[in-house]
Length: 209
Image (cartoon, rainbow, N blue to C red; front, side):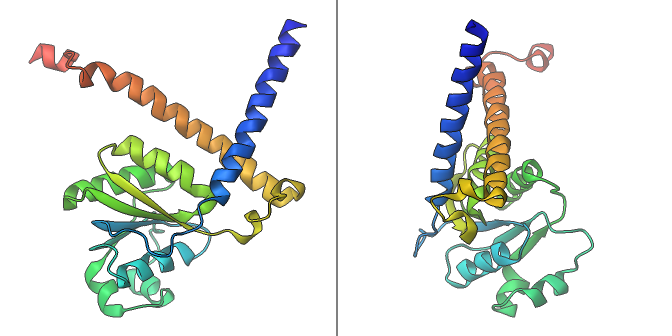
């Protein structure tokens, strides 16, 4: 009986978390004028809208450069440029392509390395609204010193307050929520693991040195 009660409590907490996550996603409507940052990063996805949005922000001088993270290795620069409306001059001078990332964790690592190599301290992050919580979590875990401004690409089908009634939207939101929880878990474990070093405790390598 106690076990069933425990399971029921966990289920209620999980369900409440899902609806809180959905409200967070629906609240990621892009601001009309995001604050300027050092640079802009776009995480590739199922459509070109994320990249197009990042290029528009570059045209508005919201950052010095754009990184498009997670580009398919078979896509050539000129092919991507042809699919992206906007200034050819800006694309040629100020857009970098990242080919290493294969998932959101890879995106975060690629973005962190790029920002460090360029000396950037602040980024505008462009991705889909449902993907934004997980993307921010992974990037912050990879580069906690970066200041991140979310700029979400809206998913119209998720704007319905009764998203849970349709199988497609319910499935998308639930799967993304589970991935987000996994990202939070990884970030927490990483934070706990790094705490001794952050507090000045010597690592085995430091002792050997």
